Length: 201
Image (tube, rainbow, N blue to C red; front, side, top):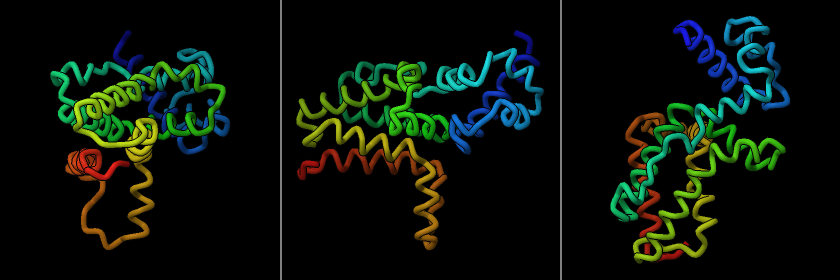
């Protein structure tokens, strides 16, 4: 693949991510994506064979489960270290590609017909979080009543970064920029502190 072709495909994918988040799958047209990517419609169709394939390609390229290590194995079955590693990787990925978190969240809450197709590209991150939490509970490190509710709490917080903007509009006196890098560590610390609390969730 030539460098020009690679760049064109990258531009189309970036434009598609943006437009799908702005208008949803149904509300986005190939024409809008082509205009945003500064290419003609025929080129989008040539590379991706239609809107549906383009949408799925976004999840293949930027999906939450792409190239993940086994966090428990990597951290010698230490659930604290595994969870911190997991959260750092996930939050950094969502910070770099916030659209993929929003798109995944939309598909999950809507239970759309596309969910089964994109599930292989997002399910691994949920499975690993469940595994880490259950190991932590087994070792007496984490305390919670329901693993499913705990996963829902953690993933909702991470997958919807735009909620930070809304909160910022409610409390504009906050002196800390929520986009600062340190918030990755802060969020990880808050999650781990809550899970280690003697008060069960």
